Length: 333
Image 1 (spheres, rainbow, N blue to C red):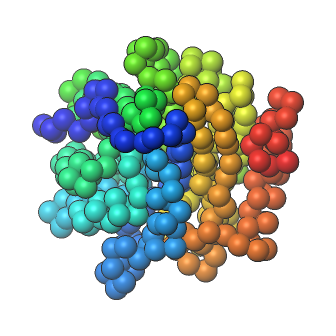
Image 2 (image 1 turned 120 degrees about the horizontal axis):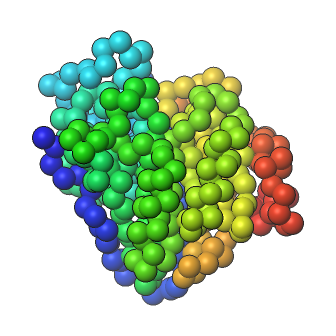
């Protein structure tokens, strides 16, 4: 039996004299496999050394943690699964030092090493003062929101994911991740009315290495905005997909890889999505291009690389946007 991983309506208050809240959202984060081997040689902080100062500019830094945290005692839950990611427990402290405040566990690697490893991951993140969402000892806890309060603004986060097997999804009696189901998402957003000023929905979805979202994703994302979400943030394809502005609210279908041991074309660049809130209103949307060309580790893109990433994001985003001025507001015109 898992211990409670996510606390209902978990609220964190922070001192902030301004009325601006800046959120940075990044893509997929893995500290396992090849990254883990590099950490053994260079230390736990090395993967973030080129971007940590940037992450610390934000009030909230959010990402998708693709590698469960554990140790040699943890055994594979699905031995036939081709890719399984396990990172050391002390990775949690490194993530905190890098600037992370909140991580989603609602992805297809959450149960790579079983429910006991999810518990260890939760304990390690809690010990490092990092909040997490999208997984729990049962379905109710996996669907619970995390609320962070800054400058009097309550920002709620919900996380849902797709898995390789139905066994990865939490049930009333089994730990796992919150599945992507429209009825769950609508109900969970509705339950936050009067409790949250802004709702951010994180979705681990779509097809790997495909740079355009499916129609069902676009339909669901727009419905989520219609139900009251302030933004939708997507992960999983390992490549960037476009950003859509719908009813004035951003839908980032996939932010690409932030930290991952992949170098194939498209997997080696991404963006940080920067959202500025003033009360309930989004008062700023921008992206910070990152590249990992010839390396696994994220760094701020410059020169030709930066231009190429922005142009690629423009190409991917333009067909998604029909609202007047959308591309300009996204900073992509």
